[in-house]
Image 1 (cartoon, rainbow, N blue to C red):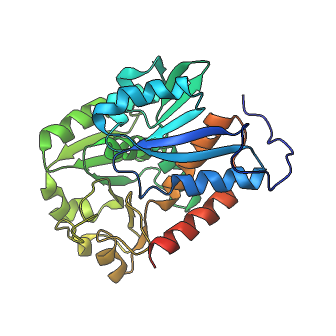
Image 2: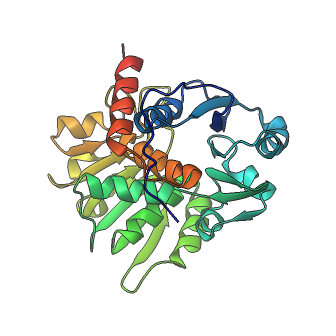
Length: 301
């Protein structure tokens, strides 16, 4: 049960003998903004807790998970490449983690490691906070990995009537579509196909939102071929990738004056959910958002 935040005096030492740790495991992880977000929340609430980033190589993941209980770490977030493998190392997992086939949030409960996945909930909260309405609409999701699974689930929960998965490997898109069709409600359907969907004028002319759930454009500064001009003026483009500048996926849509958002709000709400799970108190979302925006600004300078 979530309890109100304790009335602690701000400005307590960040690290001392009473400090409890939360963390993120990834490889690489040096770019992560999660420490800035969580530590801003601890500072705002005056809590004797700290959030740190550990670079954990895949071959050391099992040892790192054991260290969570050995060191009394309250909980850890998991990022690439650990979300799927870690699920098999836990004492238990939520239905959502099992559905998505990955855990991004692990809590230490008296030595038992319990996994959850906040990706879909974080994206759902982000879309709602941005005022995007998907009920009864068509949503196109690009990709078939963990991010795409979260995007499809979030779209279904937001009431989308039709969700189309486009992926380079159609077999992967089909597998994801079949898995998540099981949770579709009455009047909802999940479809799939190849990247030729990105050039289908009938589909693009009908979509309310296009979601990039791939890493394409993260390093090469170019995105896949997509007929942006076939979309409607009100179509929303959402990229799970975030940065100080518009992503390659977003740039053509910005030129066409479409509404565009990157993944910073999703990251924020994932962090807020994890904070609540780890600490059992309501997160100071405004302080976390400020820290995120400051960190993104600093990364762009």
